[in-house]
Length: 136
Image (cartoon, rainbow, N blue to C red; front, side, top):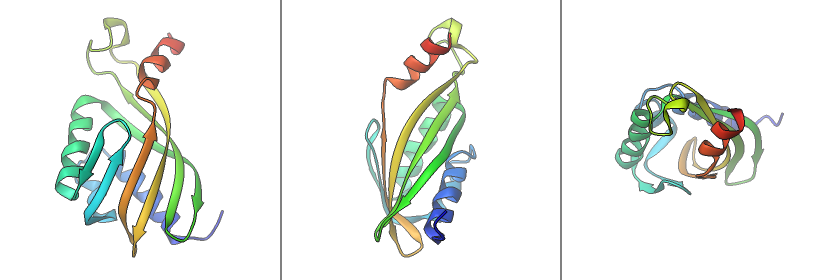
């Protein structure tokens, strides 16, 4: 693996996203950071990012974002990941309550110093339903 401290920060950031604590990612992001999620929209500044993330934690039980592979350039780090969570209720059908869904995605983290100034997340909004259907 390439010896790049930004990869370590990216890994720690994704552990923070997976911690269940809506405040955990803050130390890895600039206060004025931008999070653009292809499904969830653009969120500017840590308070807006935290609100978006906290809503996701409220919606999905045991949310995990597990990095798979990293690439770097002069501006930042790109990584693939697998996101998964448990369906806590009947919103996706009674048969899916308590089941874990899975969705693959990719992020690009633009660094400003040793903190993330922008995170852009790409994933498929239909992957949750498809993963539950294929595992059923």
